Image (cartoon, rainbow, N blue to C red; front, top):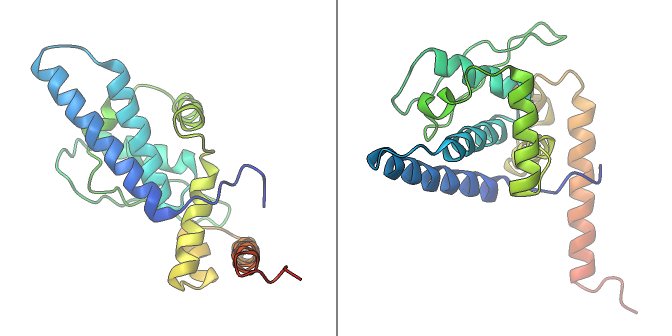
Length: 192
C-alpha cells in the first residue's frame, strides 16, 4: 500500500463529513439570515459534499464532481438520491453515483461555474489542508468497508467500474495482513 493511504475507517469519515456539513449549513443559514456573505462557508460546504459523495460511492474525484455538477444543474433542492451516467471509462460502462441525502444542489451551486479540473484541484488541496487526507484514500476506505461487509471483490470492482479485480483483491489482502499483524502484536505473539 502507498504511504498516502491513511487506512481511513469508512463509518468514521461518513460521520465526520456529515457533521461538518451540518455545522457549515447552520453557519450559512445564520449568515443568510443576517444578510452576510460567507463565501468560504459555501466553498467548504461544496468541498465536504464532494468528499462525502466520493467516500460513499468509492468513486474517483472527477466522477464525483461531474455527478454533483449534473445534480446541481438539475436544480433538485430537496434531499434526494440521484443516479445517472457520469463518465465513460475504458470498459464503456457508465458510472452511477448516488448522491447522499444530506447533500443538496444548493451546496454545489457555489462552484458550478468552475471547470472540473479547477474544482478537483481545490478539493484535493482542501482535503489535505483541512482533513490531512488524500482524496484517493476515500476510495480505499470504500473498498475496505465493502470487504468488511463481505462484499465479493468482483462486486466491489463492478460498483467502482474498476477493470482490474486483482487490484481490489490486492488491497483487501494487504488490509487483512495489516490487521492480522496488529492483532498479533497486541496479543504478544512476538514476545519471548
